[in-house]
Image 1 (cartoon, rainbow, N blue to C red):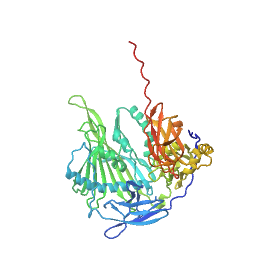
Image 2 (image 1 turned 60 degrees about the vertical axis):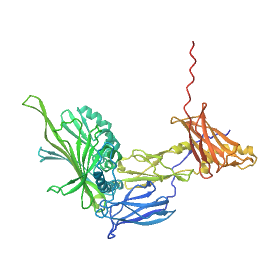
Image 3 (image 1 turned 135 degrees about the vertical axis):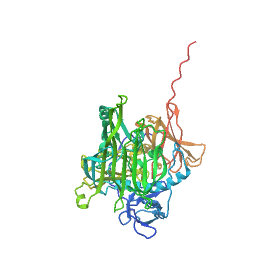
Image 4 (image 1 turned 45 degrees about the vertical axis):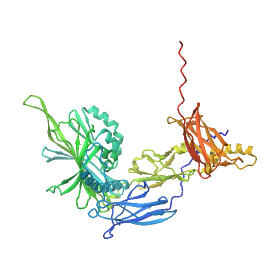
Length: 612
C-alpha cells in the first residue's frame, strides 16, 4: 500500500513569459471602404469569446497576448449588421492582421431574435420585427458597455435637482453633484439579478424603515456612485412615505433576467414638434411579476438604425391608477471617437399631497408638482481631462503546469476591489476606477479547486498601483514533474528500494473524495489496471489486475503515485463499507490525471428488533 504526502507546496505568484501573439485589424464600411469607429470587436472560438473591445477613430483594433488556436473576428456596430472575418489560425508568436466589412442596416437587416417568454402572448409578425429592431438595440448597448469597460472617455457628470409645478414648468434648480471621471456612463445600475428580485422601486411607510433599508444597500450604493453617477434615486413624497427608484442601464437591459421578466412588441412614433419619427421596442412586465416593475420603449432612429432613447415608467403594485407614476428618460449619444455614452438622463417623480375632501370630509391624494433629478455628461477637452486621476488595471493569467493548459474559473480576489474569475484562456482583469480610494498596497489572493486538490498553498501577493498603472501578475502552478516530486517523492523512493533497479512508472492521479459535497478524510482510494502474462501493464482487458491504494487526506484530497502510463486506469473510493462509482482515467508523463470520486452516505445502523 502506498501512502501520500501531506506536505503543502508553497506556490509563489510569479511573472511568466507573456504570449507574443497579436491579432489586429480594421473595420470598414463594405460600400466605400471608409473606417468605422466604435465597432464592438470580439475574438470568437467555437462557443468561447474574449472580452469585446472597440475600434478606434481609424477603425483599427488590437488584441495583445491572444491565445493560440483557430479564431474568427466578429464585428458589430450601431447602425450596421453583424459581420465576421475569415477564419484564421494563430500560432505561437504569430501576428495576424484581419479586416471586417460591415453593411449598413439600410442594406442588411440581420435579425437577432428575442426568445419570447412563455408568459407572453406571442405574435409571429411582431416577434419577427422585434428581432430585427433588437439587432440595432443590441449593437448600441454592446458599444455602450464596451465604452464603460475601457474607461477612456473623460466625462464631467453634472447632476441637479429640479422642482416642477403640476404643469411641468420649472420652479427651482438645486445643484446635487458634479464629478469628473474616466467613464462611459453617468450612472451605474444595481446588478440585474438584484433588480429582478426586489424590483425597480421600493416604498417605505416611515422614515425609520427607509433608513434601516438604506443601511442594507449602502455599500452597493457607494460602488454605484464611484464613477461620479447615480445607482438609485431617493424621493420623499409624503411625511411618512419614501420611495426609492432604480434606473436600468445597458447591462440590465441586455441581461437574461430582464428579457425573461418582460414582454416585447414593435411600435412606431410619428414625428412631432418635440421629437422626430422613430421606431421602437416597447416592453411590459409579465403578468406574474409581483414587485415594482418598469415598462417603456427603446426608441431607434429609423434612418441610421441607432438606439437614441429609453423611456421608462415605474409601475408600483396596488397604486391608485388615477395617480401618475414616476418616469425616466435616458438619451444615448455617440461620440466622434465612435464610443457610446448616456449623455443625458432624467427621473421625474410625482410630489403627492394628501388633503381633506370637502365633500365627505375624508382625505384624497393629489399631485402638487414634480421633483426631477437630471444628469448630463460632457466630454472634457484633453487639457481639462489631465486633472482627472485615471484608473488602474491589474491583470494576468493563471497557467496550470500540471496539465499544460490555462486554469479556468480560478477566483482572484483583490482586497478593497472585488473578485474576478479567470476565463477560458486563464486570464483575469481588475479595472480600478478610483485607485486613490484603494489602500496601498492591497493584496491579491487566489482560490481554486484544482489548487486545493494539489495541496498547493498560494500566499497573498502584495500589489501596489497608482492612477494610470497597468500591473501584470501572472500565476503558474508548477509543472507535472515538479508537482510529482513534491507529492510522490517519498512514495517512489520507498517503491524503488524494493524493486532492485527496475524502472518506476511515474503516472500520477490526483483528486478529491466527497459525499454530499463534503470532503471525506480517510477514504480508501484504489487504482486498478490490467497486466498481461508477463506482468506488464496492458490496455487490453485480461483476467489479471494490479492495483495501488492510498487514503484521502484532510478535505478529501488524495494522490495515487507510481502508476503505469498510457493504459486505462479505474479509480474508485470506499468509506465505511460504502463503495463509490469507478472513474476511468489515463495517466501521462506530461500531466497529472484528475479523478473526482463520490461515495454514498453511510447507511444508518439497523434498528434493534422489537421485543415481543
